[in-house]
Image (tube, rainbow, N blue to C red; front, side):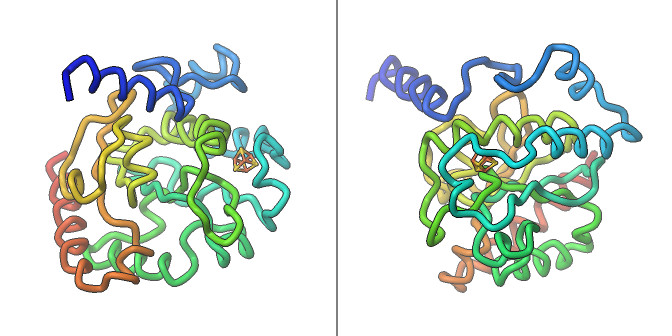
Length: 230
Ligand code: SF4
């Protein structure tokens, strides 16, 4: 593939994901003053700004997933977290409880976090989509386009040092590249908007492929090392 075709494909992928502005967060539901406050949020303000964002999302009907969800899953954790996890979308248990990563995959994520001496309370956990796709199907492009601006605003408020992308949907969105998770996992990469993105396998994938758990443990150790370096 020529360089031109690579760039063209990348720009098309950005457009499909709803990203129209580079090195800035584009969101149709935010005014300039609010955006400035979120980008420059001080630790003490972050919890309030996240709560305001949650209120703004409200009983969201911006995509078809509102029709089938039980609860919207906003995200939870430390508003001033240095490490943020971004998964794909809520599953059945998450939809039932309104909390991210609380099913079997979530329990595995918790164990991986704790395996390197961290706790769930120290980190922040969210998803690309805030409502469960029926039957846990893959997110659709228009759903990602409708919902991802909320995730970008959470990131801008929290300002994590590292964003761990769990699985291919989060990695593709945050890196702005249509690339296989197996090709990018285990490395700290520069993502869109200058984010520091560390992709690794989604815990649900690890449950289906237990032999890869060892690789995931190594990835989590690497994340801890990177956090310790500053
Ligand atoms: S998935 Fe996102 S955009 Fe769609 S209804 Fe839920 S909160 Fe709104």
